Length: 113
Length: 112
Image 1 (tube, one colour):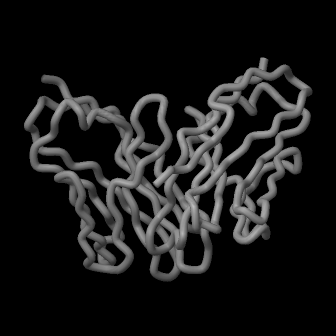
Image 2: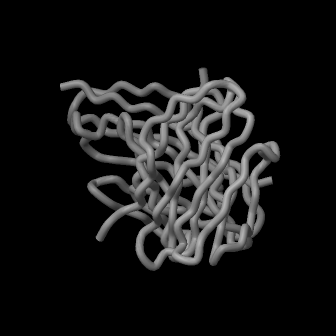
């Protein structure tokens, strides 16, 4: 079956712009989470959605937002981009993360210049 | 709060050597524990998991045992291959939430 699909794979944006990243989870998975990965901070939790509701949010500024659609697809948006937002953004989906863990996509590499 | 402490890298081993990557955790309640592996340019792949104390997770020759008494989940493999070169992450999630807490990652390089 298809895995978690993230688009685009690479993005280059200018400081101050905004960006939207997309994630299509594995069919049947209703839980979708987003993580930011950087060399300095490692993997940091952004937020988790289940059936279109945000259930949990990490410690990121309000410039980071997300949403989930009725088909479980998810988007995250970052407004007013800063240089420090350059990172690999990973989306993950699960039937039940406590029991099965998450399946991750290949990520979107965002570079802010 | 919940956290994972993972052995610092990088680790370099010769092919067929024995691998141990240490992982200890702090958590309230009874977390589930995971090892993920990341190859260059890719996302994370689930390697193995254990959802309760004394469970042993295993996959592709890798093993880890959930030790509640020592709050540990060390990753082991008896004979590593060049293809095992990657970054390994230990992670936990508590029963009450869906947030994963990851260790800092351990880079493994296996040389022929």
